[in-house]
Amino acid sequence: MFPLILVGATVVGACMVFGYSSFVVGFALMAVGILGLIVFVATPGMVRRPGERGTVIEERHYMGTGEHDDYRHHSR
Image 1 (cartoon, rainbow, N blue to C red):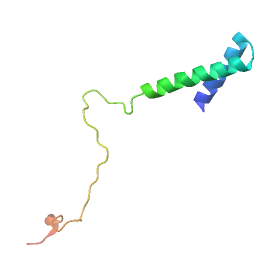
Image 2: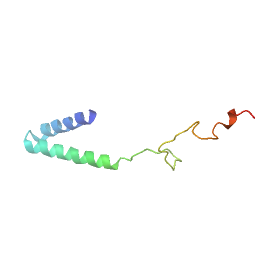
Image 3: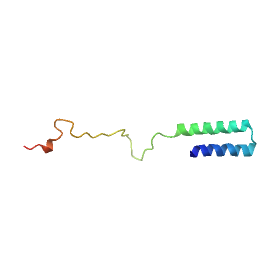
C-alpha cells in the first residue's frame, strides 16, 4: 500500500511541476516503474548477519520413527 502512495505522490508532483498532460503522467509512471524494478533487483534475498556463511533452509526433528530411537526407555 505504501509504495502505491509514493507512486501517486510522484505522479501528482510531476504534474504540478511540469503541467498535467498524458505525456507527463506516462513518463512519471515509467520512471517510477524503472526505479522500482532496479531497487527490486538490487535487493538481496536474505540479509546475513556478520559471521554467517551457510543457510539453514529447513530443520526437522523426528522422534520415535526408528527401531533404536527409544534406547533410553528399554528396561534391561
